[in-house]
Image 1 (cartoon, helix red, strand yellow):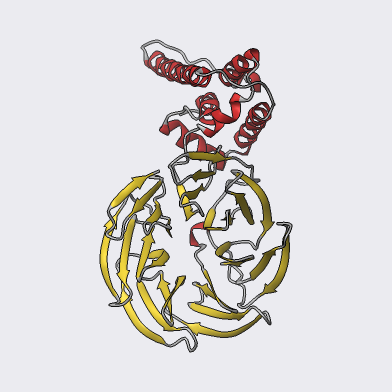
Image 2: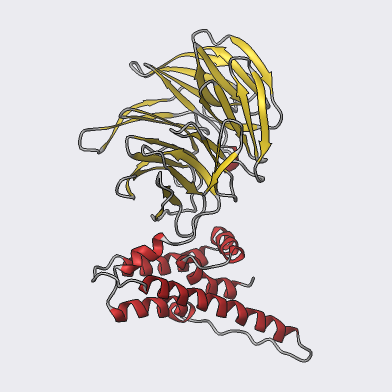
Length: 427
């Protein structure tokens, strides 16, 4: 698609009625074209400003009429583009350069739809339109919420980078702006708040699951990849430098920097895809991987000092606990049980592929790798029980309170699996 065609598709993407091809093409251009990204931000700001206006209640059926009008406009635009293509390929046809158009001209279809809403005086309809926008298809991270639902985030999304799914399956899109296309490396949920780690913007975003809104954002180290939440404590680690930050929420819900720990020497700047580290809180200790150095550091939260450093495997990237042992996932292709005090390996299991995310539930380790495979390991027997592929890009895995696991499958959204890796649901 040409740049002009992508400009014309942008309103449909924001309204959630674009085709999958249009959404992907727009997202790709946003990453490489600052001017196009600026135009998208301007349009989104206009639409968001209109959407937050207060007005009377919406009559039944009006939302459907508006969305149908938007869909019809999108279909008409698609037919027009096809007609252009046919005309330009006809013998003797000439291609005429399009004159630059104002933002109002380029985005007129979106304003036609919004104008209808304004004329009828039903501005309160707009938040519902945005919540009905197509859910992100690139689920990068996922976490289970307090009520048994899910929260997942979409790296580089145009409109709705975060989606909340209630225990009943209802979806709610959460919008907020970032200075750069987001790159989420980790997610966690505790006591009604979701924590989303964005390495591209060096931020930790905090979502109030009850209100369905982003309520705070904290500055975190560049290359932030590790995240652990326990009680009022939130700990973040940088994969690049090894810096670990510990935060706490006070009684007013505000943020407070509690400690700064730098347990490892800085590493060279990494590509985003290489930001793979993890944290585990066990009592007064924090275990932190540094996959570049092949180590796991043991940190004392009381003194802010490093107590020990274990040399483990080639590239430790994920941590868990089973009994008295620390379970370490090695991205090079191994699962290692380690004595949590001495760091001495107890058992090692060779794995297929290169898993980089892990969660442990009921004695089973669930591993995901970016080739789309999910693997289960029985930790009592320390052997692989099952291995299945779901798409081509499994980015994250999270336990759910009903005993199932949620997997962020990249372009396939989120799937819910049972302990036999049978698919239970898709979001």
